[in-house]
Image (cartoon, rainbow, N blue to C red):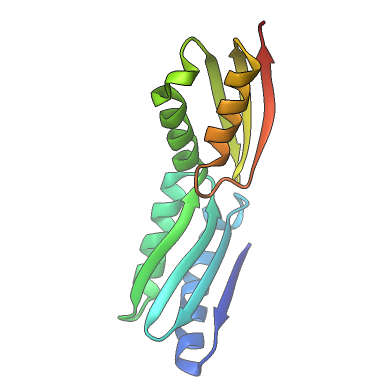
Length: 146
């Protein structure tokens, strides 16, 4: 869903123009993207979630084309970015040594799957995934081997 927030007539014009550009793109309409377009004080801001980095880039380019000289701030979060950040945090944390964990992300909701050796590792994995900015929830599907 694509929505707008604007207070002045100038802001509404820019926000509706960006809305038109983004909503004409089928990939953004049909992939459960959740985008809020905010316009105020010469600033056009994209907030929300998209499934992939490609969709984030597409939304950014379309909003830039519609911005009419306003400064664009892209605060969109993609599931791809979240999965990558979760994987990096899990891989770099020494508490996760010897684990086999996969993350699946859908619109900010994370499923952690795989095997850990202890409940402490499980708890640490859940904490690490939940601490990533943009993660809305973490679903534990980990198996503890001990």
